[in-house]
Image (tube, rainbow, N blue to C red; front, side, top):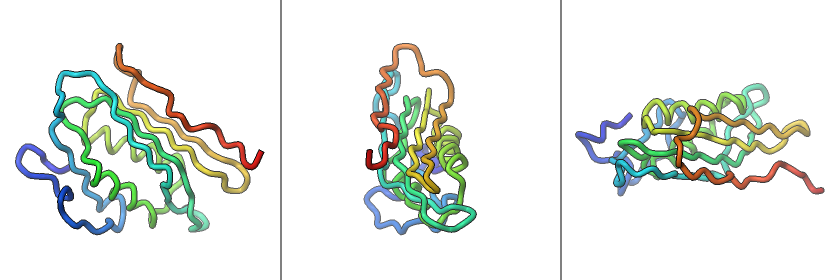
Length: 154
């Protein structure tokens, strides 16, 4: 985690190379501009890619990350670089989806976080993976993630 209390974000306003792996990616966090307000932030990554750990073939997903900030928010460029670092990362859908959510939760410490991983079919079966940190806070507007179930060409 980048310590936002003593430094500027690493990536914002800078040229940044795509990290070689999720472990090498540095996520930047900046102070929440609306501390004390209950609101939801949504990031959608409709063209997320990682690699199958067995075949090495690409897997594609539409990720939706929702969170209610506390003291900090994740800086979007660093999140894009982090998500892009999965292009050469081998992992099962469940591990990738839950791992992204848990890393954001552990580092950012939001009030609440959820991630939906809507994976495109491999071997004829789409796999959707959902994870959340806890029940959403009372009073938080949590809209549907808006990603329909896979229907193929039907």
